[in-house]
Amino acid sequence: MSTQSTNLLFILAMMAIFYFLILRPQQKRARAQREMLAALTPGDEIVTVGGIYATVVSTGDRVRVRVADGSELEVALQAIGRIVSSASDTGDEDAEVITEADVAGDSAVGEGAGAVDDSGGSGNR
Image 1 (cartoon, helix red, strand yellow):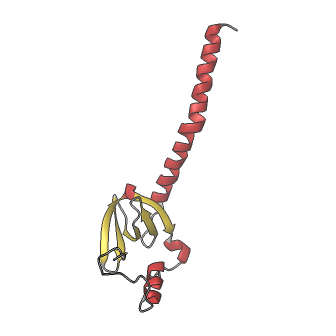
Image 2: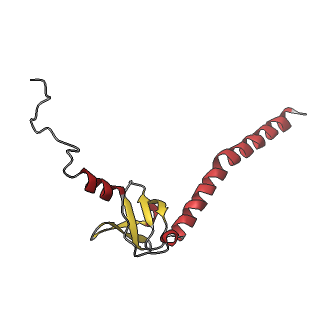
């Protein structure tokens, strides 16, 4: 084998490795993201790439999401990181969702949880 054919074979091998280790997995992730966004429907619970948990109200190029009672945001479609639970999983789009914050808020009230020291000092006087 000549030096030229060895170099050509080496370059082809490196291109194949590059394709299977970098390009192919990236294409799979992009396809999965496109499919997830295409399947987005009102009632789905999502997490944005910024970490905001919300419920989808309407979809399009911009997605309107409800983050709290009466509080809605409009986010770019590409800003949706993942679907936490789908409206079709629960079977009822109008069902009220009870979150961990709701449960924690009910149980922590009046129990001294999260007491705050308002003295302003470090406690070493």
